[in-house]
Amino acid sequence: MTNPIAVAEQELKDRGIGSVHLDANYAPGVALVVIDNPQRHNAFSGKMMVEFRQVVLWLESKAPEDLVAVIVTGSRGKAFCAGLDLEFAREHMHTTPTLALQVNQVMHDALSRFARLPLITVASMAGHALGGGTELLTAFDYVCMASTAIIRFVQTRMGVSSPWGGARRLVNSVGRKAALRILASAPKVTAEQGKALGLVDVVVDNNKEDIYEACLKASLSFLRPFVFDDRAGQEDRVSAGAVRGMKQLVVRADLDRDYEFEAAILAKLAGSSKI
Image (cartoon, rainbow, N blue to C red; front, side):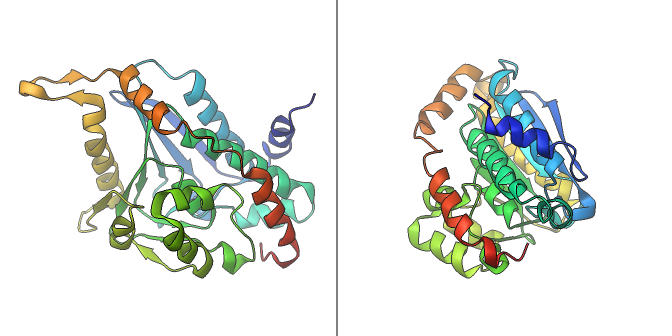
């Protein structure tokens, strides 16, 4: 039987610009993934969606045994990730009706897999997260965010719902009432507000000469106790297998069960989409 995700990836892999890079040896026990599309505020084109999912599959099945964590950041600029590349959407999705479904299949699968990786995941967020970028953000274990960045679920302003699993993950993160307000009324959530809600873990003051590097440094610092045991002045590695095991226990619940329901809700809004 044909795998619909594989079919979708074949359709998307050559569409649009930008790329997703993996540095598996960024720091001891830590990999780095860069969402690189600065011309489009690090938004995902079709080819980037496929590349991101392939990176997730590699982290899922081929990562070195001593890898404990992964940091994800955007390339330098004003945005961490602006979600769906609207130029890609206008050029390809409007002319190929089935492509919208395939985009959502690939990204829902990629983010669901990412959320349950047996690795500690941290978003290094020097810039804004908007639309689909917020869906991505909800898939992380932890978020290190610049004090001047904002999080905004603009989906309702674009005439769509939450297609990549972000709504359910947000409810799990901040609770039902806060999630509904953030999703449906689209407020600009600051770093401090995000921390109060439990959506953000570290706020990085933007009084640094290079906030991009400062966020990466803060992310590494946050991850240190997951990687190193600093007892008695020694710098011993924590058991990677033990940390991975704890992560697997935490994410045991099924994260995929609502895809069909989310897809049905999104389909009802297809006529009102502003993408």
